[in-house]
Image 1: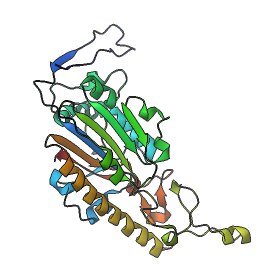
Image 2 (image 1 turned 90 degrees about the horizontal axis):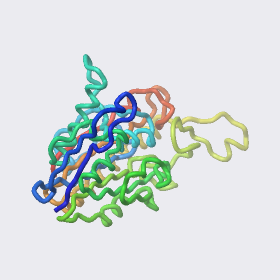
Image 3 (image 1 turned 90 degrees about the vertical axis):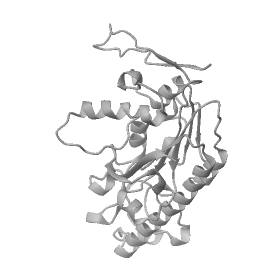
Image 4 (image 1 turned 180 degrees about the horizontal axis):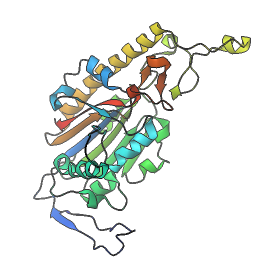
Length: 301
């Protein structure tokens, strides 16, 4: 019999004298769902809706949601807290939205009575899931999420992939144990610049995040003015991101075939991307709606 307990640590502040709350139950009598949390890095909402995604569509209708940040690291920190991209509701207090979000982990896990207090004081989803008996595994593609960052802290197994376009390799490594539920946290780099393009197809840019500009060696040597991507290049890059989503959908279909029936999938993005709108390209130090609009869909496979 496997016993799981959560909520043993009271929040240390104004709640210093609060009693610890323990929820204990047997995972032998309750079949916990496996959870596969997929983040298509940089995939904006309209890119997703332009793509043909028959496998992801099996989960339900995609929603337009909004990321908590405009670049990878802080958005993924919100994910490890247990927070999904938000719906931007009006007429409610933020605290109410947060509490309702944490309660949804009851549906996702298939386990009873999970609430916000069970996440305190660490506010760490992988830690909560480990206390519930899960094996927690993360595979990430972007170096900014490497294993030395705080995001990795509460996972049983955390690895930065050698190739940032290797969702297929992640799937090959994944295992599902009927005796223990698994939580897989997967950051996919295929939809991040350079969108699986080879060097011959790429415009030259300076940097890997934020507002990218086209710079080649000759321009720098001659001291000429920096050239931004032209509209045709922007459209080509956006079309390529759509192709990346379609490629990932095919891989998700392969993963769905591999996963048991009691596997809850979450598919979303950490932030959007700009392809020339109002003079921007990329993401990061950008305040634009397209940098925050992301797809969101979840459900049992």
